[in-house]
Structures are given as C-alpha cells and as structure tokens.
Length: 254
Image (tube, rainbow, N blue to C red; front, side):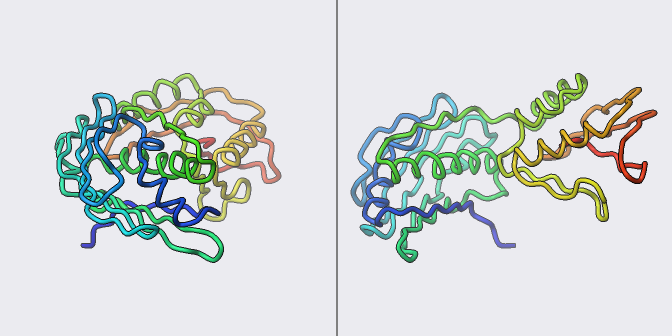
C-alpha cells in the first residue's frame, strides 16, 4: 500500500526568488525557536516549540528559485508515543512558475496517516504554510502562528460531551469545526442539502433550529471512541417542526 505523504500548496503573485528567500528564512514564519543556519546547502539547525517539539534539520538540497529540502536527523515529538516519528523524514519545498504566478508545493515526506502525529502535525503545517509562509511571501512581514498542544480524541470527545449535555451545539461548532467543515444530509433529504465552510454550516444549523416549534426533550448519548473517531447517538421526543411535508429526518444541527 502506497503511503500518502502530507502536501499543501499555495499560489502567489510574487517571483520564485521571493518565494525561495522566504522559505530559507524559517525564523520569520515557523513558530518557535530556531538555532543555526538555514540559508546554504549542508547548513544544520534545530527547531524547538515549547516543550512539545524538538527537531534537528539539515539542508540536503538547495536549488535557487526551484527547490529546498531539509532532512530531519533527530526528533523528539514529546506528545507522541514514538518521539522519533520525524527522524529520517524530509521537508520539501518545490517552486514552479504557473502562468504569471508562482506555485509552492510543500511536502513532508514520511509524514503520513500511519504515524501518530499525522493529524496534529499536518494541521500545524497547514497553518504554517497557508498563513505564516504565505503572509511572509505576499507582504514581506512575519506572521508567527500560535500552535497549541494537540488534544487526544478522548479529550475532544469529553469536551464535546460536556457541551452537548448543555445543548451548546453552536459552541461546539465554534470550538471544533475546521474552516472547510462539510455537512452532508442523507440521500434524498428535501430540506437542508449540502453545506461547506463554517458560515454555511452554521446557517444550516440555524435554519434547523428555526423550524422547531416545540421540543419536549432531547438527549445525547455518551461518546463511543474508536481510533481517531467518536460517535454519539441523538434522540428527540414529541418534537414539532414547521415544514411543507410535516415530517423531518432528524440530525444534529451541524
């Protein structure tokens, strides 16, 4: 089975030289503490983020305006069971012209769904590349991204359960939903359809709430955790809805 390395892409108006120079200055976009040189082939540097992450990188490939590759020679991912998950992985930046724009393809070779920190590390990389590095390239100004310790699935499920028992569904959306969240109805649902993005999904939930004219009781079961997922059951009793067909397929409003 082919492993899927983490990738993300940005496209900017700036030149390949400007993109290359920004990549080679990680202190200006990679949150945390960096010691050592980062601008020449065979340079070595260490990166530390609080007490969560310590790695040592070596610049093993550098083609001006085209490509930069760092090899992770040592790692201590302190929240993972295998703290050396990053050791031996490569961090690659490939630069290419795309019409009158410049594309940057970022790949962390070896960061794939088979390792424990994939979800949290890929999320952090997305923030760093899409926000931190993008801002540096497009404005010339540093934007330090505040990363946080990743929650375990058990911690997320427990927090979800706490808010669900208080019927705080929109607080759940605000706290946990990604910007590209999707809400998908069952096939042939005539009412709400498909929504993508935090604002459309929230509006879908608000539309759901507005259709309720009476709610005598509702309850949410304890979360059942399996791997990196959890599920809950949701039940209603003696509900009334305003809709054209006087029936509704119940679902969580998010």
